[in-house]
Length: 514
Image (cartoon, rainbow, N blue to C red):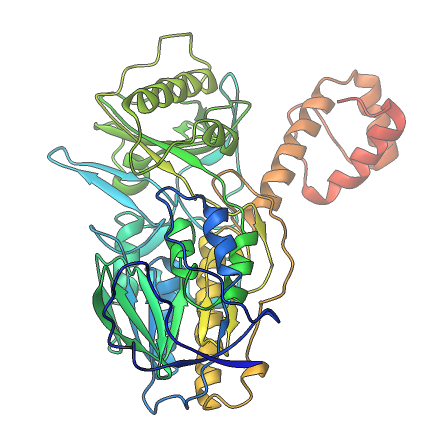
């Protein structure tokens, strides 16, 4: 059903340049009664904001796409930046609006504290590349000196200081000077991308075949299509009155975790377990409620051996983040202090140190990532509403990794470019992801690392198996050799291909001893 409506009448006089012109939209409901306008209360919940979007009528653009279309991308994280980059590859101009005061990047954040200086990657810690398209992109970044392999030891740290190194494969990549410089450099060689920051786009208005963007009443331009490359409450506010109920409904299904980050600088190196004579530089922490990850930024980024200060990033578990969640824009001092002390106690326990023996950091800062990582996903590269000429990209559509974010941005860029090439004809053929169901998302508390998760599982299983064999009586080991044909001795290593038959034998013969 096609309706012609006037802009909503506000409770107070509002002089808009669009008051005398109507907008053509497609109604998404059979109810002809227009819902009354109500001013949103401060601190309304995410769900309450999204609930109001479902009474919106669906925007339907009927005007032809302009000869030289331009796309607005709201969000300058990995997905938004890659969307802009690949739109340029298809000959489409774009403008990236980002809230970053210090730079682009979103969760590719690096904090530098002067005058020391102290340096912390306080969001994304590293990434892997398993997809050929993303791997080619990473290879180019390596050649340009933007990223490098993280050669330091990474592993799993159990409560009490028991450390298990992970295999060197797959390669793990980090920004040469931190993660944020990588984000700032992605668009350095583009010519059809404008960047506006810091900018908080507060309103999207469809008018006369274009999207009109504004920031607190100040016009920010008009665009043929829009991309929402972020999530959380800011995205929800944009969706709440934009005329995009189908996209809003998908966003409603997204669930996000909360993670606390503790940045701490120490005068002396921490007493971390050695592996082959070299202290670990990063560890997934197990068995500690308040800590899920720890990394030595000084060794990872600057690479000094024993020269201080030593800058560490610690992340909480998602469960700890949920229990201690507060408004991230205004963290109470008492909460910040409690979180800091609890996480430092967790670090102490993870390293196997006696109580109160961990050296006190001379610098600390806590940050709450209130919308840290997705816990469910539709498992699709992107969402695009061709009738509303609006799309969403982000890691959560495929997983919770930098690779997923990049692939999502690339996919949406190609989807929009294909739609523009068709000149907007048969728009229903280009809509994607508007009805997909969500599934739970597995991974570490700090995200997914394609190619690494399987290696983590194999490494831990092999370690457990080797310890089991080492504890067996000699007669059982001789029997094991006879049955499996593998020469296994105390301290000997095991190859992955031997894992299945050996485990099968142990379960059948020893009753699943562990």
